[in-house]
Length: 166
Image 1: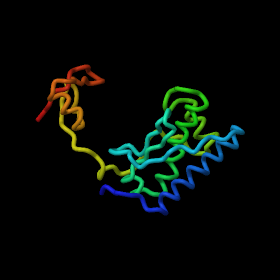
Image 2: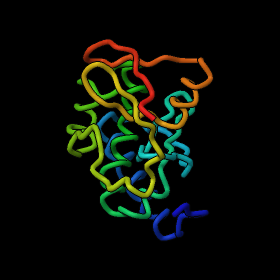
Image 3: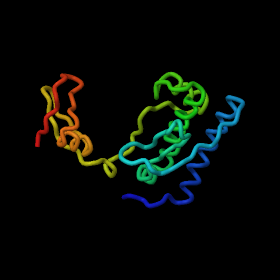
Image 4: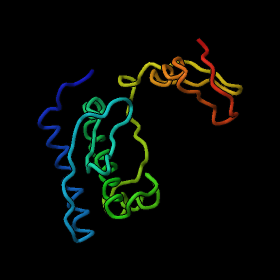
């Protein structure tokens, strides 16, 4: 299902969480952070992305609609933490010490790196590849890059170049 829009009540719940977490950060740091831009343009299996320089959070509308409360409670603070860390510390490891600290101490949220949402409805078609030690599944984009001769991919374990298994 590809929604064309998010229901107003759901968008308001997202904004309420975002603003509440932003207020926590404001109080903790005794300053006022600007409200980040919010869009529902994230696709694929990724729940959300923080665009640091643009001060923007992009959310996956399909995963939001399927996991409303859990999505809001986990993904909004997660992405906001990335923006706050960038503002306070500059470029650091995405889920490193500063991010974990921001999540737990400032936003009072468990610092989880990944979500556990069912992604069957948003998972893209993959293509079967093999190396010397295992099988791999490449996305359409990577598969097409291999076919056009633009890229080769290697196994992280054995170092072999991946070959299309057809």
